[in-house]
Image (tube, rainbow, N blue to C red; front, side, top):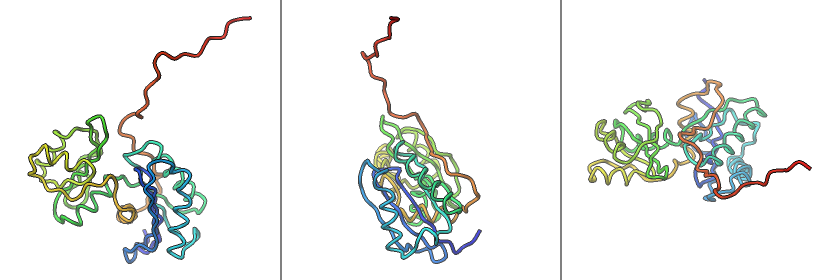
Length: 231
């Protein structure tokens, strides 16, 4: 894999709609745009990408690869980001790689706490937590999972892991404050997705959404369509 790549990174898995242009040779961001919008990623994403490209002075034709957040997070947001990334990669005939939000958060925590294992933890609602354990070398030790604060704290204690992510303080509270916390965001900085993709490499596999549980959709009760009767 080339080391001097211009990578477009996209993240729409959380409340943010973000894109950046990343130069892997110098590990620098050439342009970025981040909007906190909650919903409406489909309407804003291409404009966000265009703004990041304009800042960088690059065009779509200058891109060497695309990195995209595959979640966990918003079902709709993830689908929008992955579809856009795959479409752009196909149009430009360049590789595209998926990076989980947990991987990107672990990358940031390992920069802050070198030599330590990291347990990124995200609030999954319903008193559940998305988590994945990464070793001190950044390798995946435990794959992304759905768990709760008590079990997440037990994993962190067992591996002396640093906590990071939107559920970090909750998990640390269960452990009576005995665990280190690197940060509490719902997602990582957009540049981290590009940096992780550059480290992992682009093997040609198409990114796919990471769904750790079913969508938060409940059928309506007391509602039914009338049946047609024979005339």
